[in-house]
Amino acid sequence: MTDRYNSLIVVLENNIREDDAQSTINAIRHIKGVIAVEGNISDIGHFVASSRIRRELGEKIWDVIYPKIKE
Image (cartoon, rainbow, N blue to C red; front, top):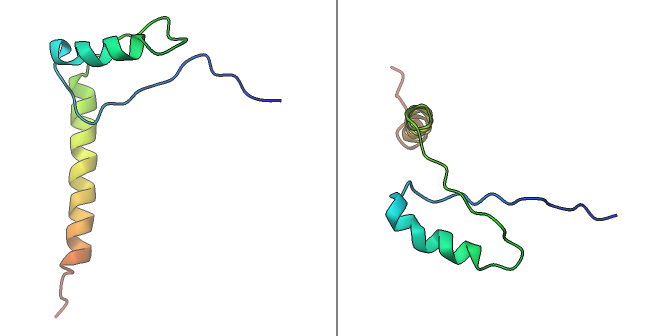
């Protein structure tokens, strides 16, 4: 038996302004079977969390490229 989806989530590469997103939203509405499209407003909590994760990963990558020399 095949699973059936009741929704799909689209994740944008970067946060974009509401008016800039309108053409993308309209394009998604034209896809067969789509009955509703809504924007999800980004919030400060998401921004803080993603910034911290980005920084932690950056530090780890930096440590791999330039390991600390123990003397």
